[in-house]
Picture 1 (tube, helix red, strand yellow):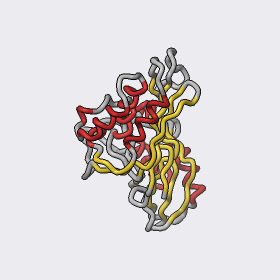
Picture 2 (tube, rainbow, N blue to C red):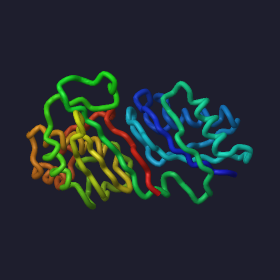
Picture 3 (cartoon, rainbow, N blue to C red):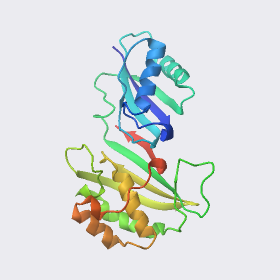
Picture 4 (cartoon, helix red, strand yellow):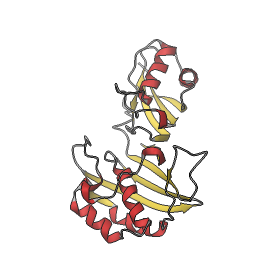
Length: 246
């Protein structure tokens, strides 16, 4: 039974998230239906991360098993991409791998990017793909405050109310904020993240960028271990799963 590892790019704006669910179309569902359309097999496509509704991916990783050995990796990629049309989902790379590989449990690092369009005018071409914040933000102050969140902490303050993780303790390996032209980019790297962790951190750091909060306020919010002590949740539009490391 061959196992295929796929790397996927998608615009999550029209989807209810990665995971198959009853209340709307999902990325997982679209992929599973496309695999069945060409192979005739019902499979489970297992993703490295369960991105939320509206969140995008540049290189999500997933795997699935086929009972038949009639298909090579190139055929799988071409066939699935054909049946995915016109959905904004594309398999960028496919490889056959062994049964020991698991897209979720074998992952050692996940990297995310959050894009803030920081200018008075709203986006035209990037509508739904950035968070528009018209007030000028101080990226340097945001970056400095972000460093207070590095390392191993109880991130309850930045955790969604309905997060299903067994523990709020996570280790944030890297978190940087920089200005790139008219955009503010927040880059985060960790083995795993809590539900809404990056979006809640981004909403909090916006307060710093606007001069309403200081680094000390971020430190106090983290120490409070209380979601009510943190800043608002940034919208999903600007969040991208950039890569998964193994």
